[in-house]
Image (cartoon, rainbow, N blue to C red):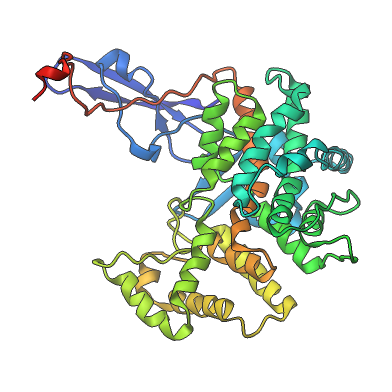
Length: 435
């Protein structure tokens, strides 16, 4: 829980003799916040904060972001250190449990996850209910939501062991669900998971392998995939995480909550941002068109947007983007990709934008979506799978946030207020009397 600060905020309502003193609360790092829970009782007014950009909705010990300084911490650990020294499953353990695992704890956790990678066999037939050209995110929303019908032995959210098993199942099964969504769309046989591979290797194997020939995972690509997953594992109270928490506050089962998070992530302003980057590059078409495109971006009367640059939270360089930038160039070098017009265009756009005073002064640096879109395309993923991969990575963050909320004794059902701007009370008029 946050601790009361020594200071407070006093608010006086103009035109009345009403006033209230609200305590300031302090977290372990970051700005103080004032507790407005007594505001309506004392003054009869609410706060108005569209998008909740200035409202703390919960206490959390999981992720901290300082957008002005470009800082991202998982349980206090800088993302740069975790990306350099850790792996995705170790980060999963950290987010779920609060501390990095010992060697024994790490091996037990990895074994626990990998024992749940397979899907109930009847889920194979569940996929047949979708159209062959269904978007992978539509398939994932449906299949993840259906997990509660297949694994209803662990739905007691008030039982710690049930929560633990559900966490294992979600983290373990999302790569299988996503890979099978892709296989279903392209008409290839489903590939079962292999528990002798790492988490990232296993996903690449299920996604790319076919029964007709042996598939060997490229270590450079598996390292890049593991890195992408670490960088996307959690990001504080974003739209999809807040959706998971809001759904969870009703007592809904974890599979339904994560399905809600996937649906929220699907939006182009959230998880679909890296798809938008590739679409933008396709619209630019050629490096010769970059100058004219950037001129349109700078024109305030033009609605052209530079996708993959800047961030709502980070007013400095996105720390994840710096890490992803190196991984991006490593992947392109490893694959020896030359002459791909879209990738050549992306590299040139990055170079020009980073040297253009207009974007530098406005701190519109490339964000993680810009580089992840390029990497995933280079690794052979269709654009339709980009957001699905994001969902695979973010599942551990959603589950960690859901688990923290359920275990918080102060948790209550989410219920935002509103400013009503519709008609005031009025009487019903029969149809024959309406003008």
